[in-house]
Image (cartoon, rainbow, N blue to C red):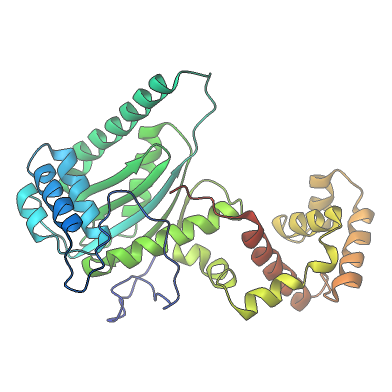
Length: 309
């Protein structure tokens, strides 16, 4: 992955002005007053200072909260004895837990706390003060100091997380300078939301992997127009699923037929019906391009939010 840094963003990719905010994260500062300070902010800041001066896991979390929240990290960093880097990797994470036998809420809560503690311990042991985890039962945000912006670094971190959780993980990564961490966090969680809504597989994604999907799912007139292209076939589930599988199988009629357990002639018939109803020809590059774009926009819109607050 190659990265450049527009001076106005500090992100390793250009960030549009209309980038959505991720769902709010418990524990982050939400200062909003005219003078930049409220009683609540002071209380939160004091709590973080106490955490930063206590045990190392609390210190890492406290500093991570400040950086993600867009506040000056100096006091927290000094209390924690952690050096602030100029560049960071921001990773949004979802852990896909395997089904387990029913247990009491108390046991489940204790087990979850143990898993998080185990992961934080492993991160601290391997990455030291570079890792600033903000993790919960189902994932969260991980900020990692990465002054060299090593392209292999995020992949190594992802492999480490999978190995230490023992569960499949979906993650998205954005690399940014320290001042751009809040925007990088928003973008990383936007990308994770796209992956989850579109049902993509569990792996690591960066912005380059999802640049088309990101653009197609932004709200506006173009997005609304794209979604209407599929309106004539939405009541025909077999046609929608045929289109979805045809795209997923790289436009191979034979592979699509195998996936749907039908004859290839049936696929031909359904593709012709899609053309008749939508006016877009799935046998032509332009028509297929519009149909694929419309399917992405429609699926994202109808899936609804997946990231828990």
